[in-house]
Amino acid sequence: MPCAIVKKAYNNDIYCGDECACWEDGNRIVLFIADGLGHGREAEIAAREALKYVSSHLHEKPEDIFAGCNAAIRETRGVAMGLAIIDKEKRNLTYAGIGNTRALIAGEKISRLSGNYGIVGANYRKLIPEILPLPCGYRVIMYTDGIEEMIEPERYIHENADLKFLSEKIMENWSKDSDDAAILVFRVLYDRDNTVSGGKMIIITEEMKDVLTELMNTGVGRAAAALSELLHTEILLSVPFLEILNPEEMRSSLLSDIENEFVNIKQDFCGGLAGKGIVSFPVSKGKTLINILLDSFNEAEENLNVLELEAISEVGNLVINAIGSTIADMIGQEIECRLPSVSIANHMIDMDEEKPGSVYVVGQTDFAVKDRLIEGKILFVFSYENIESLVESFL
Image (tube, rainbow, N blue to C red; front, top):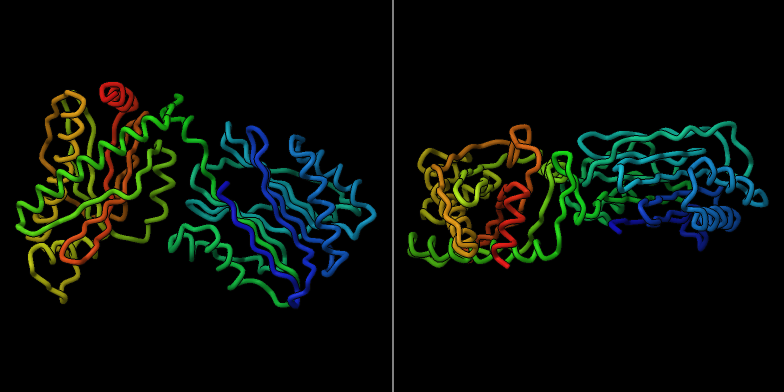
């Protein structure tokens, strides 16, 4: 599971009174955090007894888990405790907490979750779980009071998607020297073999992924050959990473790039295979690529001028055409490509203009030219029916 846990004992003690864990139990994922009262050996015993109880009652409702744990660890100091239960089918999160553990959801914005007063193991008055929608790609962050309450995870979410990196940065920047500390970071990645788009179930199989990856890489190879011939210099193109996303997942993916400005080349195609292709670069990298290709380095001007926009539009046009025609050839279909358009925006694609039921094939694209590596992205949008018929035709 995409989960990272970091713990730190007070004064580098051998005992740590804070515990975290995550489990997958059928159709749900359970995230757990506990802070044993005080610190040292007795605090560690309390936290571990709470963990032990929860791990054997994962199928129960949060109210029952808390009540049972409250009774089971009465011989210990007691703990502050938080539980987040993710329902993979409903795509929501139920959170309940007693004491001063903290939790938040990091997505389009930071949503801080609230708990109730008390100590598990020494009684509490009430427990009020809250239920929130949980889109794919969001992060759930749970931490003890050995970390400052008002952390700012958004500082690092866009800088690096690695969960270990994010949890370590939060520990480094906001942990206290006066207590144990623990943090759990979980990234929501629902099973993509069963995703929902446009109100219907979409089945993305490994076979589909393999076929689309092969088609994309073959098309990119053709695009590299065409660019090399056009520009009289060797250009290598590769797609080292490919994802197949539904609209909800695509929206979440776009969140990680909202701080950048992109130059996007878009081209629609129709015929036996309909859809659109987009080649996208951060503006600075797009300018670097064009400067290399044109042997024209204008460091004083950061923005792309008209000539550079035309040049990068031609590059995107060649790549999209090569991939589109490759796919069409291999499945025995004809496609008609419309004129490309080029724009600069802070997103790769405007999801508000997209039709429900679309499937997004997103790949990182590396342009290797004159000993430089320029990273961009390539996106193809198809209807799910097109994807199905494409794979069936290829097989």
